[in-house]
Length: 375
Length: 250
Figure 1: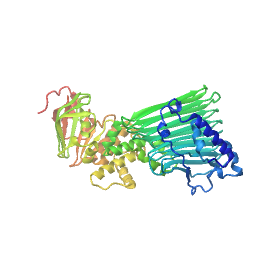
Figure 2 (figure 1 turned 45 degrees about the vertical axis):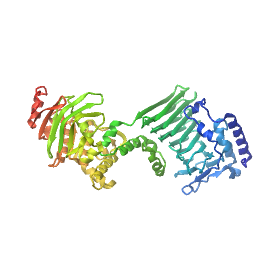
Figure 3 (figure 1 turned 180 degrees about the horizontal axis):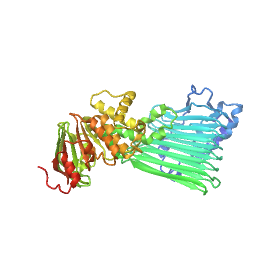
Figure 4 (figure 1 turned 120 degrees about the vertical axis):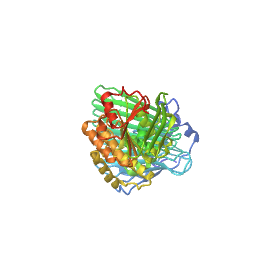
């Protein structure tokens, strides 16, 4: 069934054609070097309608609508749909099947309480394609939580795309919390454009499903733009967690930081790919990138690839990656004070994860992530 | 209270460190173990506390009649054996207050005592911190992170006070302390002395023993106790070094 809006329907037709041509990512696709989607591809899951829950009580002034419902005023927002994540390649799969939602925050709007969007995978062996476009206009200040979770059990597939436009001087905090049901495959892409003096802060929690792949693409397009990205990926028991981050400094005086941490237990596999690109004209830019990993079992594995691509001399950049194990001496110290091994390990994994968990906008999310720290 | 018999220990690397160590500490006594570097002092303290990486090839350790070596590290301290570390471990990201409360409640629960809630524990903590003159802002910081050498050792004695052990093993607690800190630490130890509680003070020098009077002094050399005497033995060792002690004690 095609979308009732001709512009959207046309875009979706293009996307369908593009995905038909490209297909699923294969082994030769560099961005999916360590993550295979063949298992979910083989399931040929039928698309199901997207279920979006919006907690309105804390944010009465905000309304989230399906684009199809909009008339008049919101039509210009359509120009942004598919701009940051165009209908090409694998991402076109999302646009081809989605029902796009729009969160449009007018210039100067300040909302303290986070706007929480719940993407619920319906029960049954299905695929769903959440798509969200967030337009945060000039000078606004908001916090958005996207929570991915599921009903029922067994295999399912989420391919989610969020496009976020951070306007001039706007401040946007975004939290993506991947807590899909145990058998689910999750692929999400967050593409962000930050205008002059805009400030973007992102916290990723990647811990659900059998496979969780979270892409983050940030473009700092105006002078003074900042992006602060952090993430925790935690899992065991065959779980595969992949974070793929790209930050492009396209303008001068731009700043980015990245702090991604992996906690991997028995049979888990983690992947971190982080690219920082500093364009020729992006002088006086600063970029920091860190990926730390703790392997909590001999069968845990992580591949980390921090990359810098600097086409400008006048910049401050640093990056690094570490892979370690739980500190045995610290563990003994805690146990020698009467703390049992399970609790001692929890204290140490909790300390490792603390800088990320503390950045979560709500205690409820922290409580939900807490069991992920038990190994 | 503590009976060590013919203890033989080697490291996982295969080096034999303790070669038939025997030692008996009755309730209420302070025993000092002195010895040169490499004599096995720290190995003894780690083996008693249950650190991995050591293999007991012969001998036994009984604490109040129980086989101490069969217990996990956390079970030993719950049973009443506490080790103050020579090098207290820094644990960034875990606050000292949370660590101490978790530890104290785990130990109390195991002993059948009521656990503390947050407010009650803070009161207890403030009292205990005062004894070793640790400022309360130290309790909010991460475990030993950025503490000076003296602060770390005082934190150890603070833990000893809170965990209320029957046997405290102090592994070179005096090392790295200036005179003032030494006196504070000694006061903390003395405050804990009682007819029920025993101490095993492992030290390289005599100076801590000026402040914490031992009942018995042992000399550990080559993995065995080679001499045992009264407090005067410590003074003699300080004056003459370890070289003259060659004959095993009776």
